[in-house]
Length: 114
Length: 112
Image (cartoon, rainbow over all chains, first blue to last red; front, side, top):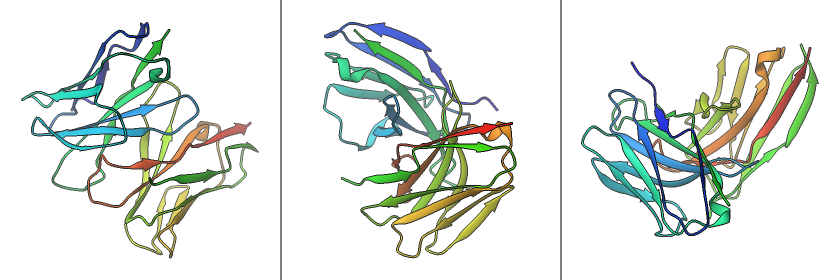
């Protein structure tokens, strides 16, 4: 059983650019959640995808958007990057059935905006 | 929105000592979760609590869901060097695994 993987590991962008981060779910998981973790803080919920539809959103502006594909992998897109977008971006996959807390995190993508 | 206050922010202890950390919320939760995050990794779930008053253990770790549903604590007994890391509490009001509110973490350092 493969775990949650994310790519790339690190990324450097400049203000105003756009970025796409990718996540592959753990085998058998159909739900993906994305979190932003600023330095020294806990993860903050961005949004969740289930069956290729957004299924809940945290307090993030529309320039944060996502996609989920039929194989349950997912992308996080951020447009018009700002300096404050510098953070570790984590995705987590889970199943809708079974124990509700079976949420497994990937290692994250470290995004630096200059 | 919901806010979690986690304390202490950091702890420096000797190997073998017991550790206690806690989390308080401005809102009630139906589930409390405790995670550990190592450098370069995502958080890993340690303990999940589902009922007010519940006390649950996982090896040397024990966590409790506060009666008011607004707080939780985590204890680690007989700490060892591999306990080093950042511990996060998280609360959830619904059954959706992904939509959790996290505290800002307690950084634990264990001196051999």
